[in-house]
Image (cartoon, rainbow, N blue to C red; front, side, top):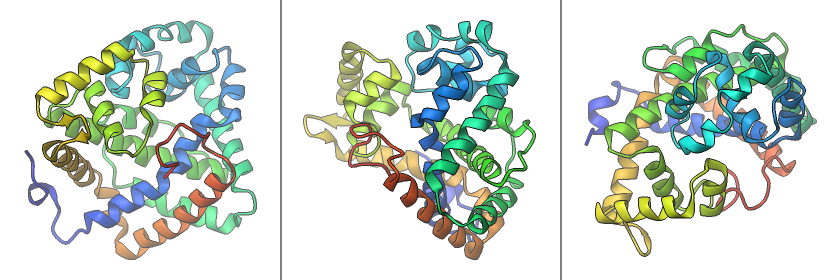
Length: 294
């Protein structure tokens, strides 16, 4: 098991960097639940729902195969991915999907942020764009595809793009941590759900495409490993999930190490305020996230 001491750069408060990542996450993830997402992507020829999601997030990598989507998205059932990819590329060109995604993200954020001062949007966008200059594409395929896109100039869409780059870079690192600690995509989903944060079991199975039988088989495997019991995560399970999160934090500290503690704290302040506005505006449907959204 990799320890924090092996990964932490000297003098960096990884906890502050992790708070910054968590604070900006809703600015990206709300988009998948917004009406603008399916409306704009359906206008390219895609089917609303899962196809629009898979194609939208994968489009910066080009017309990739179902195997690439399964690998980079990680916790989706391969059978679900294969129902939509590569058929999506026969209905819409990746470059058109990218353009529609930018338009829909900008529209949803503009609607939900409402009276948020433009100066705050510009300031947070500037901070996060500067943080992105510290990111590297090596071993980060989903991030790399997004990083090749041209930066938007409109403030709200620019903010969303910066958040997305940071989010996908961290996500790629999270997959490294899961692999290092022996958790498949389904294992990761089951154990994360067992923490009581994130998706409910029903929402996880429905949105990720796993059958109850597949979920039960994974639960049995994890129980045999001593990570789960009838009450949820065991002590070993809690420790393993903690190690995964610590490794993920260490692999995503670079952008906020670059900003430094004062500017990172300002990111947290601005982003948390915007996230509260999103949640108050109904950005997340009821019954999707355990205990509500972040």
